[in-house]
Length: 126
Image (cartoon, rainbow, N blue to C red; front, side):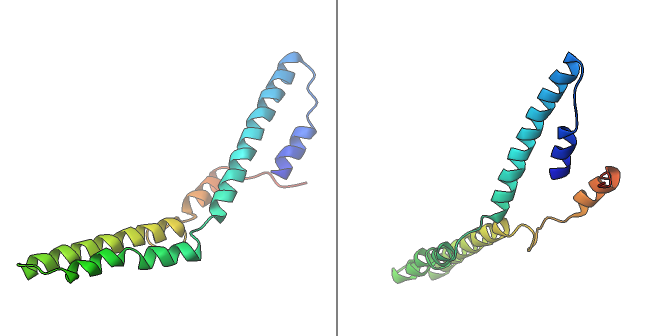
């Protein structure tokens, strides 16, 4: 971003059309820089340790307490409890996967960024 801004500072428009273009271009660049800052801040955010403790321990109480009550059909009750446990595990895995987009499956790879850089090489810095 520093190189882009430096190149903008070197521009000295001469015509009114160039001045309008530069003004609009600077506005778009400011918007792009703002969105970039937001992406960087969002990448640093993660689920805290306390929240993970609550996420891992809290949901098991309903699944475990389901067996505290007497049932007539133990097999169907066991199936229902297992279903709740599996759903809890899937939800926890989803939270973990969204919290670590580059580390677990499915994950983001740098392949698309590498293809973009090959198609749009950056100018060498002077």
